[in-house]
Image (cartoon, rainbow, N blue to C red; front, top):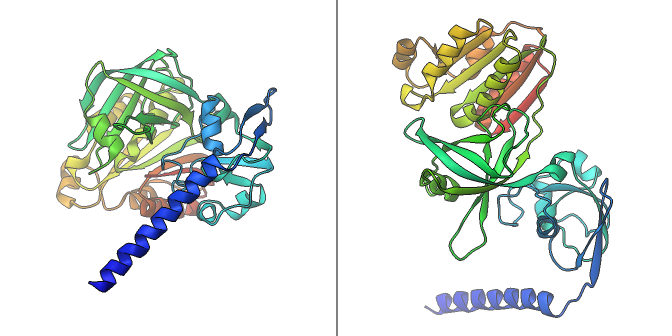
Length: 362
């Protein structure tokens, strides 16, 4: 009992001093007015010092993706701090490569604006916009995945590259909204609407809220984000490899490619565990029948019986990629799925001579 009381006393003391430090920083420290120069932008940002850089940029309608509530645990809010700023914090080292550290990349949520700064943002971040959309349909794609289709209201159109993503604002009662990233599942020519394929995650704040939406509900989101860029040469084959709900960004790529280059060779390798996990399987079979150069290959990892019934490959999807692709053709590849799948597919693509590859981990 004495030990328990001692532990409780120590914990309470630590919490008290932590709160005291927070209050002291907010009330006693005055960092004055700070200027943030953004490379390529004419007018600097002038703000009272003390806030984190992510919050300041958001207040200026500059939307940098972040999903961890400014705790520095998602690693998405990367910006380049060219001048000013405090030393890189230990938590940032978990998410920054050696090359990024050398180029002064930081996590915006961990940079305190306590002095004048000069920063660089990508053009994609500078052009990201906050959108209001209204749900026009909800379609169950499987037991755990729903397609949420939005019609844009303000602004009324969006321009994006295939396989980019948006960040949805999820309202939380009596708290600031939380943010979750979802790949755009619709093609680029549908610029007045947006489709999101959302897999329900047990206890997940974002997926639970989105799965409860109905027609007419409003969704706020920012974007588009992401570095995926489709090769514009129709002579280059496109290879898409998806595992599970990693199919969402591949849908955007496939439909965009077939609309613009109907005769371009495009592969879609789709891996799932059992037939009940498959999303829109007949749709891609019909596309393959309609477009001779669209090759649709399924791989069922956990059920040989389902593989036979669906006339699909049996085993992990990377094995199907290895069997079907020959070597040394001109190709660009996009891969989305669990980390172990990404590693296995990466090795196969390297063996096949594919070097232009984009990866997206679920």
